[in-house]
Image 1 (cartoon, rainbow, N blue to C red):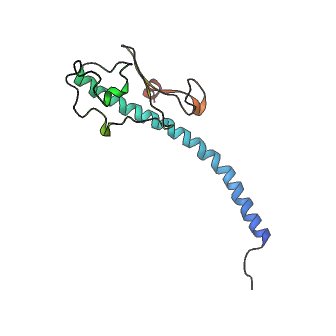
Image 2: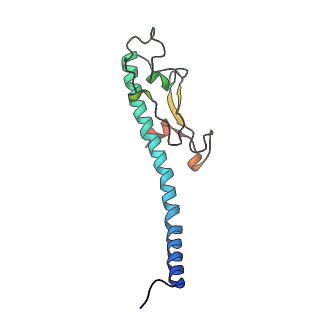
Image 3: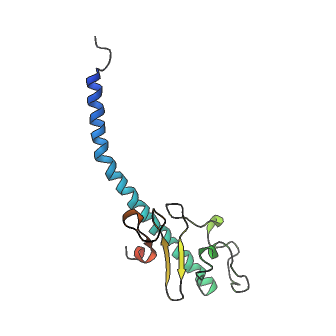
Length: 140
Protein backbone atom coordinates (compact mmCIF):
# COMPACT_ATOMS: atom_id res chain seq x y z
CA UNK A 1 0.00 0.00 0.00
CA UNK A 2 1.44 3.32 -1.11
CA UNK A 3 0.93 6.42 1.09
CA UNK A 4 2.16 9.41 -0.92
CA UNK A 5 4.53 10.63 -3.57
CA UNK A 6 8.22 9.89 -3.64
CA UNK A 7 10.76 12.69 -3.76
CA UNK A 8 11.57 11.83 -7.39
CA UNK A 9 7.90 12.11 -8.42
CA UNK A 10 7.59 15.49 -6.70
CA UNK A 11 10.77 16.75 -8.38
CA UNK A 12 9.50 15.68 -11.80
CA UNK A 13 6.21 17.52 -11.28
CA UNK A 14 8.02 20.66 -10.09
CA UNK A 15 10.36 20.59 -13.10
CA UNK A 16 7.43 20.18 -15.52
CA UNK A 17 5.57 23.09 -13.89
CA UNK A 18 8.72 25.23 -14.07
CA UNK A 19 9.15 24.48 -17.77
CA UNK A 20 5.52 25.32 -18.49
CA UNK A 21 5.79 28.58 -16.55
CA UNK A 22 8.96 29.56 -18.44
CA UNK A 23 7.12 29.09 -21.74
CA UNK A 24 3.82 30.76 -20.83
CA UNK A 25 4.80 33.75 -18.65
CA UNK A 26 6.84 35.68 -21.28
CA UNK A 27 3.86 35.54 -23.66
CA UNK A 28 1.47 36.79 -20.99
CA UNK A 29 3.76 39.66 -20.01
CA UNK A 30 3.95 40.87 -23.63
CA UNK A 31 0.16 40.89 -23.90
CA UNK A 32 -0.21 42.95 -20.73
CA UNK A 33 1.85 45.81 -22.16
CA UNK A 34 -0.14 45.66 -25.43
CA UNK A 35 -3.39 45.79 -23.46
CA UNK A 36 -2.18 48.90 -21.63
CA UNK A 37 -1.41 50.62 -24.93
CA UNK A 38 -4.87 49.69 -26.21
CA UNK A 39 -6.44 51.10 -23.03
CA UNK A 40 -4.58 54.39 -23.56
CA UNK A 41 -6.10 54.68 -27.04
CA UNK A 42 -9.60 53.85 -25.78
CA UNK A 43 -9.35 56.50 -23.06
CA UNK A 44 -7.95 59.09 -25.45
CA UNK A 45 -10.79 58.47 -27.91
CA UNK A 46 -13.32 58.86 -25.08
CA UNK A 47 -11.67 62.11 -24.02
CA UNK A 48 -11.77 63.29 -27.63
CA UNK A 49 -15.52 62.66 -27.77
CA UNK A 50 -15.96 64.58 -24.51
CA UNK A 51 -13.85 67.42 -25.94
CA UNK A 52 -16.18 67.49 -28.96
CA UNK A 53 -19.13 68.04 -26.59
CA UNK A 54 -17.19 70.76 -24.80
CA UNK A 55 -16.48 72.47 -28.13
CA UNK A 56 -20.13 72.24 -29.22
CA UNK A 57 -21.25 73.94 -26.00
CA UNK A 58 -18.49 76.53 -25.75
CA UNK A 59 -17.38 77.17 -29.32
CA UNK A 60 -13.72 76.36 -28.63
CA UNK A 61 -11.59 73.62 -27.15
CA UNK A 62 -9.78 74.20 -23.85
CA UNK A 63 -6.38 75.82 -24.23
CA UNK A 64 -3.21 73.98 -23.28
CA UNK A 65 -3.09 76.06 -20.10
CA UNK A 66 -6.68 75.15 -19.17
CA UNK A 67 -5.92 71.53 -19.97
CA UNK A 68 -8.22 68.57 -19.56
CA UNK A 69 -9.16 69.93 -16.13
CA UNK A 70 -11.50 72.22 -18.06
CA UNK A 71 -13.70 69.15 -18.55
CA UNK A 72 -14.15 68.86 -14.78
CA UNK A 73 -14.69 72.49 -13.78
CA UNK A 74 -15.32 75.71 -15.68
CA UNK A 75 -11.97 77.47 -16.12
CA UNK A 76 -13.60 80.88 -16.74
CA UNK A 77 -17.35 81.34 -16.11
CA UNK A 78 -17.28 84.74 -17.86
CA UNK A 79 -15.87 83.22 -21.05
CA UNK A 80 -17.65 79.86 -21.04
CA UNK A 81 -21.24 80.85 -20.33
CA UNK A 82 -22.69 77.65 -21.87
CA UNK A 83 -20.50 75.37 -19.75
CA UNK A 84 -22.48 72.45 -18.33
CA UNK A 85 -23.24 72.88 -14.64
CA UNK A 86 -22.19 69.29 -13.92
CA UNK A 87 -19.04 69.46 -16.04
CA UNK A 88 -18.22 67.00 -18.79
CA UNK A 89 -16.68 64.13 -16.81
CA UNK A 90 -18.85 61.89 -14.66
CA UNK A 91 -17.79 61.82 -11.02
CA UNK A 92 -15.54 64.81 -11.67
CA UNK A 93 -12.35 62.81 -12.02
CA UNK A 94 -10.20 62.69 -15.14
CA UNK A 95 -9.02 59.24 -16.21
CA UNK A 96 -5.35 58.46 -15.74
CA UNK A 97 -3.26 56.33 -18.03
CA UNK A 98 -2.65 52.69 -17.08
CA UNK A 99 0.52 53.75 -15.25
CA UNK A 100 -1.56 56.05 -12.98
CA UNK A 101 -0.32 59.32 -14.51
CA UNK A 102 -2.41 62.13 -16.01
CA UNK A 103 -2.58 62.58 -19.76
CA UNK A 104 -0.73 65.53 -21.26
CA UNK A 105 -3.04 67.78 -23.29
CA UNK A 106 -1.78 70.10 -26.01
CA UNK A 107 -3.89 72.51 -28.04
CA UNK A 108 -1.81 74.92 -30.11
CA UNK A 109 -4.84 76.37 -31.88
CA UNK A 110 -4.58 74.22 -34.99
CA UNK A 111 -3.60 70.83 -33.59
CA UNK A 112 -4.99 68.91 -30.65
CA UNK A 113 -2.96 66.13 -29.07
CA UNK A 114 -2.96 64.03 -25.93
CA UNK A 115 0.07 62.11 -24.75
CA UNK A 116 0.80 59.28 -22.33
CA UNK A 117 4.48 59.00 -21.46
CA UNK A 118 4.35 55.21 -21.22
CA UNK A 119 5.62 52.97 -18.45
CA UNK A 120 8.71 55.04 -17.58
CA UNK A 121 6.88 58.38 -17.36
CA UNK A 122 9.61 60.10 -19.40
CA UNK A 123 9.58 61.56 -22.90
CA UNK A 124 10.72 59.19 -25.62
CA UNK A 125 11.53 55.59 -24.97
CA UNK A 126 10.94 52.33 -26.77
CA UNK A 127 8.65 49.36 -26.29
CA UNK A 128 6.55 49.70 -23.13
CA UNK A 129 8.37 52.97 -22.32
CA UNK A 130 7.41 54.61 -25.63
CA UNK A 131 5.17 57.66 -25.60
CA UNK A 132 1.66 57.11 -26.95
CA UNK A 133 -0.03 60.02 -28.71
CA UNK A 134 -3.61 60.55 -29.74
CA UNK A 135 -2.39 60.98 -33.32
CA UNK A 136 -1.02 57.41 -33.21
CA UNK A 137 -4.29 56.12 -31.76
CA UNK A 138 -6.34 57.71 -34.55
CA UNK A 139 -4.32 55.73 -37.10
CA UNK A 140 -5.38 52.38 -35.56
